[in-house]
Amino acid sequence: MEMTLLIGLDAASYILTLLLVCIGLVIIFGMMKVVNLAHGEFFLLGAYAVVLLQQYAVPFPVILVIAFAFVALVGLIIEELVIRRIYHRFLDTILATWGISLALKQLVIVLFGPGSQQATAPFSEPIAMFDITYSSYRLFVMGMAIVITVATFLILFRTRLGLTARGVIANRQMASCLGVNTRRVDRVTFAFGSGLAGLAGAIMAPLMSVDPQMGVGFLVPAFLSVLVGGTASPLGALWGAGIIGGSNSVAAAIWTPVVAQIVVFSLAIVVIRLLPDGVTGRWKR
Amino acid sequence: MSRYSRQLTVLFWIALAGAPLFLDGWNLSLLSQLMIYGIFAMSLAFIWGQGGLLCFGQSLFFGIGAYAMALTTKGMIPGIPAMTLAGLVLAVILPALAAGLLGLALFKGRGLHGAFFGIVTLSAAVIAERLAINWSYIGGFNGILDVPPLRLGWGSWQIELYDPLFFFPVVLAAAFAAFLMLLGLERSAFGTVLRGIRDNDKRAAFLGFETAEYKAAAFAVSGAVAGLAGALFAVQFAFVSPAILGFALATEVLIWVAIGGKTVLLAAFIGALAVKSIENVLSDTLGQYWLLVLGLLFVVAVVLLPRGLLAPFFNIPLPRALRGAEDMLAFNRTIEGQNHE
Image 1: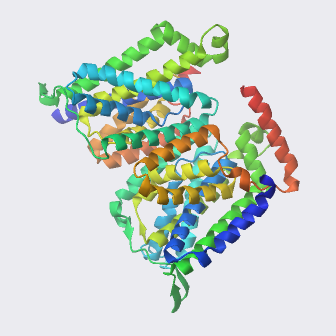
Image 2: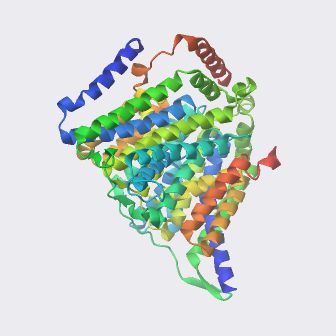
C-alpha cells in the first residue's frame, strides 16, 4: 500500500513536471507552428536565474517572477531577430532554434562554467501523510504545475488576449482583416511560451543539479508528449504528459529508469506513427 | 559561378587525390578523418536536400555501421568471419536495412512528414544511444576498444593498413565512390521523382508514384552511405562508443550540411571538411567561444542562406534529358511560393 502510494506520488510528480515543461512548448508548437528546440535552454536560463539570484538573497517568489520575465524577454528578442523571418518555413524553425539552443547553452558555459551548481529549495521539510513522508518542495512543484496550467488555460480561453491569439491561429488572414495586429500576437505568444519554460526551470532548479545539460534531458520526453497528445489544442499537452510521464514512472518502478525510457520512447514513436494528430486529434476534427 | 561548377568539382577531387604529395603523416590522417565526416555529410545531404526529409538522427546509421564494423572485425558476431570485407558489407547493409524498414514504417499510409519525422528520428537516435550504453555485450558505456585496422588480402597473404599513407587512398576511394553513386542517383529519373515528392508529395502520389517506397528507398541509400562512413570511422579511431549513435553527432552533421549546402553533395562534403578544420584551428584560440560562434553561424546560415554557403559553386546542371521535368518542378515551386504569400 505504501509502495503503491509512493509510486503514485512519484508518477504524479513526474507527470506534472513534464506538464510544466510541455505547456510552454505546446503553445509555441501548436499555436505558432514553430518547433522550438531552444525550449530546453529557456528552461536552463530559468534555472540559472535562480542560482544567480539566490547569491544575492532575493526571496524565492520574487526570483520566480524575475525568471519568468527575464526568459520572456529573451524569447521576445529571439522572436524579433530570428523566428519572425522563418514563420513560413516550418522545417527551418527546427534548425534555427537548434542553433539558438547551441549558442545559449555555450553562453551559459562561458558565464557559469561547465560544472553543476546548486540551487537551494526555500523549504524542504518532509511532510508526513497517510503512512508515508514526502518532500514538501516536491508537493509545492506539483501544486505550481497545476496552478500554472490552469492559469494558462484561463488566459487562453477566458480572456480577450487568449481569444485574439486563438483567432490568429484559426485564421491568420481573417484575424488580420478584422484589425488584429498579428505581429503583436506572435510576439506576445512566443514570449509567453518562453517565459513559461523559464518559470518551469526556476521552479525545478532546487530539485535538480543545475548544469548546462539539464535542458536536453527534458527535450525529448517533452516533444514526444506534445506529439502524442496532439498539437491541435493545448489540451493535448495534458494527455501527452499524462501518458508519457505516467507510463514512464510505472515502467521505471517495474524495471529500471533506463529500460523505462527506452520502452516508453519506442512506444511513443509507434503512437505518433499511428495517430499523427495525437490522441486528441480525432476530437477536434 | 555555377558556370564553372563542373570544373571546380573535378579540380577539387584532383586536389584531394594529390594531398599525399604535400601533407605529412599526421595531417594526412587528419584529412582522412575529415573525409569520413564528409561522406557522412553527403549521406544526410542526399536525404535532406533531394528527399526533403530532415533527419535529426542520421548518427543512428553512422553508429550502426561503426558498431557492425567493430563487432565483425573483432569476431564478436557469431557465424561471421572476422574479416574486413565482411565488416564493410555488414556496415553498409545493416544501416540500409534499418533505414529502409524505419522509412517504410514511418511513410506508409498516412505517413509522417516534416517536423514530426525530425523529432521521431531524433528520439530514435536517443533510444539507440541509451540501448548501446546498457548493452554490455557491445561494450556498454565504454564502447569497443582496439578495433583492428583494415586488412587487405586473403588467408596468409594479408597486409594491415596502419600507415596513414595507405589508409588515405581507401577513404578517398570510398568518398569518391559514395559521391559518384549519390550524384548518379540525383541525376537519374529516380532523383527527379524524389525531388518531385519533396516539392509536393500529394501531387506525386496523384501521378501514380509510390511516394512511401521512393522515400524509404532514398532513406536506405542514405543509411548505407552513413554506415560506410561509420565503418571507416571505427577503423580510423580503433574505437567505437555509444556517443556516435546519439544526439551530439546527429546535430553536428546537420550543421555541416546546412552551412555547406544541402542540395549539392560536394557542398555538404566540403562543409564538413571546412567546419571541422576551422574547429581544429579555432578551438585553441577561441576556446569555449567556438561553439557559441558556430551556433550563431548556423542560425544565420539557416535564416539568411537556406541553400548554404558553398552550394552555388558546386551545383552541377542536370542532364539535358531531365531538364524539362525539372523546369516543371521549378515552375511549381514558384507558383506555390506565391500561394503561400
